[in-house]
Image (cartoon, rainbow, N blue to C red; front, side, top):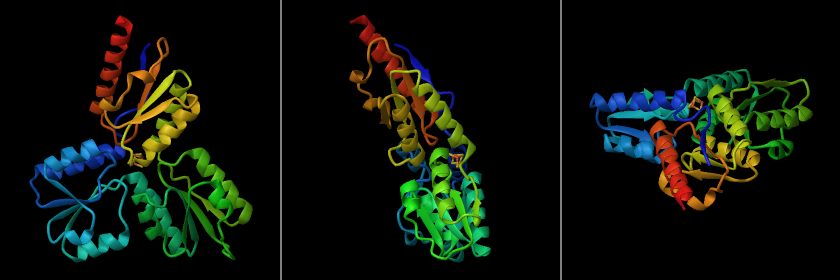
Length: 288
Ligand code: F3S
């Protein structure tokens, strides 16, 4: 048995930047400092920031004064404006790739276009994109939903993507909408380069190993998507774990390689702990 690490693991550029900005603010002792929900979808990293003083809140009205850190997923422009009007400082860690999708959604809205967003309607990035896209926005998850979408007499439609979607799903949705609105579509592939290359590297490794371990938060959209891609390419033998303590020795078959990949909000130190634990299990199994 051997452990193989995917060529892309650990924090992506946007998460590294967001965590760095929050840590800088905490080090400067700006207080009180809040985030609306988790600034990234990784409970272990958020717990570390909370120990340094970051307060995670669910409702924006819980802030009376201080600083709000906007997460890497971005925030609705209506909420950002209302916070500024209350005199609360903002540290905006929205990932530049997400900002690009927000700009396209806003510009399409100004041009009077209907915006279709390919993504998960409950995800904070998509909720904010809907607000940028205005009243005429739709969210579709997949081709099936796109097929049943009622666009009425709309003659100007733009399609954009949640940044962590898979390219295949995005193309499938675009094709389904094109059948409804031939000639009126503007298509913007706003999938981020990091997510795309992480998925490609994980898929490549999945085909070479007996089982894949995906390390990341269970609430993380890109981690769940990686799990789906790994399961598809590793014959269903893929497991999502948040920490090394969840690994079960029964997952590993003697003589077959184990692949490890991680979501974009998983720190390197967590990936290293997972690799160490798998190596220890392998050593114990070899001795038997
Ligand atoms: Fe940004 Fe892509 Fe990461 S959108 S937060 S670089 S997964």
